[in-house]
Image 1: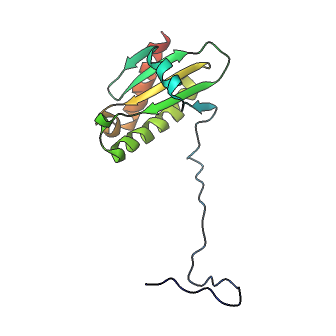
Image 2: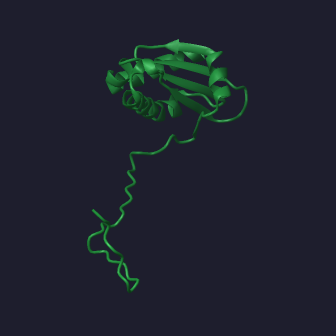
Image 3: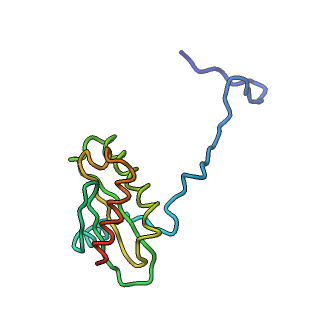
Length: 141
């Protein structure tokens, strides 16, 4: 099958082509006032700091001892599953962090949320939120 030919007069034929639509949902806000960790050295520094496990995730926390804002990173190993399962777990962790960290996180801290095999993706969302709040309380002492 060959693609349709463009009109010779230079005008665009828009009868069959749908217009592009951009959708922005108000509920899908990014992590407000929270920076996402992307550098390997920041993940390694958080791994050497405090950690607290819960049923739904492992949380690592590090006090950077500066006046910066909250930074958070997300990771899931291949033990969690294939790429689809890892991405689902990380999406849930991102949403939990967006809801919990502004209220319970501390400025100048780095947090790394690590997904657990099967538990992160299948645990009820409210329990995931409680798990993160519990882990933050333990990390902050």
